[in-house]
Amino acid sequence: MYHQLAACLQPPATAYAPSDVSIWTDAHISSQMLAAHLDPAFDGASRPHRFIDRSVAWIKEILPPQEYRSLLDVGCGPGLYAERFCRAGYRVTGVDFSSRSINYATAAAQKQRLDIRYVCQNYLQLSSRAAFDLATLIYCDYGALSGEDRKTVLQKIHRALRPGGKLLLDVFSMRQYSDFTCGRSWEDHPAGGFWSPAAHLEVNSAGYFADDLTLRQTAVITETEIRRFYLWDTYFTRESLAAEVQAAGFAVCACYGDVSGAPYRQSSPTLAVLLTRQ
Image (cartoon, rainbow, N blue to C red):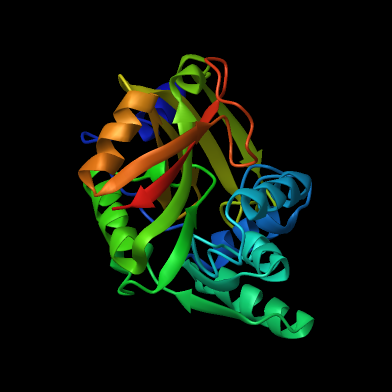
C-alpha cells in the first residue's frame, strides 16, 4: 500500500505543472476556499483579518487615496482588502478568477452599500489601460506563477496603471525557502472533507523542486478517481525580484518585510516591494 500511495505523489516532470482541477472553479473546493478566506483567524487562504486591518491602514498612510484615488486589487478573493480599501477612501476595482468569491464579494458590497466594482476574470488577461493610480497583488500570489506568467501579469498591471502609478506586491523570501518543511502525510476522510464531498483518502507531500522553488502536492483518492493538486511557490532575494520587475518597466521604490510596513530583515519570511510604473 505504501508504494501505491507513493506513486500518487510522483512530482510532475515540469515545474509549474497545473493541477488536475482548478481549486478556484471546482464547485466543492471553491466553497471550502471561500470559507477559509472568511475565517478571521485562519491564514491558510487569506491573512488573519487583524493583519489585513493593519496592512490597509499602512497602505493608506504611505499611498493616501487623495493622491492615489483609483485602486486595482488583483486577486481580490471575497473582497477582504477591497472592502477596507473602499472604506479608506479609494475607488476600488477587484479582479479574481473565482466566480464564487466574486459573487460573494459583490453581494457583500451591496449589503454594506460599498461602491466597489468586481470583475470575474483571470488576471493574466487584464485588459484595462492606464486606468489606475495604484494596484495591489498581495498574499504572495506572484510567486505561485511560472516565470512566463509572472512576466505576463506584470505587463498587464503595467498597462493598467497610469504613468507614475504604484504597485505593491509581496513574495516569499529565501529565508522562508530555507525554513520549508519537507515530508509526507495522509488522512482518511470517510465523510468527505476539504477536497471532496465524497469519502476519500488525502495523501500529501512537500519538497524542494528547484533552487528557488517548492512543491506541495495533494492526491485525493476516491472510489472512482485520483485527482492531483499542485501548489507551487517561488522564493526571491531582493536582487532577483528587482531584476524581474525592472524588466517589466517598474522601478523599485522601497522594500519591506511585509505589506503592513515591517522593516525587511534577513529573517523576514516575506519580502514586499513598492514599485513605480515607468
